[in-house]
Length: 132
Ligand code: CDP
Image 1 (cartoon, rainbow, N blue to C red):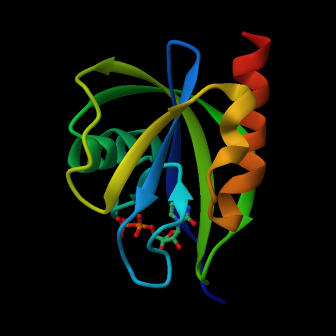
Image 2 (image 1 turned 180 degrees about the horizontal axis):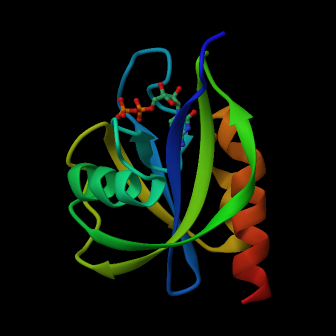
């Protein structure tokens, strides 16, 4: 039996909006939108991985807040976990893996073509933003 490996995605909130990131690679995912993040490295917690990935990919510091309930299958052995996170410092820039970033108000999250695995978490994040 293979142990599942976690990919953590961040539902990054700032001023009532959710961050969406458009992937530039690999070719089969390029052009699709995701909650930015990546694979946990050995020994890392999900919170640590999220902070590291968003620093590397977007040049910002975030504070992970809470995990969104659920776990979504990716290419085995990976599964997606999503955490809400608050932007602490910096301005997001697509430093690696992405070619466009957008801040979406909760009523507009459906305007981009999310990766399948992200959709339930995006809907949950939009509900959290709407609830304020
Ligand atoms: O950067 P790293 O190699 O750690 O991970 P990644 O390439 O960002 O994510 C690994 C895989 O997880 C991707 O190939 C996507 O298929 C998937 N993924 C996803 O579906 N939704 C996300 N929000 C993040 C990753």
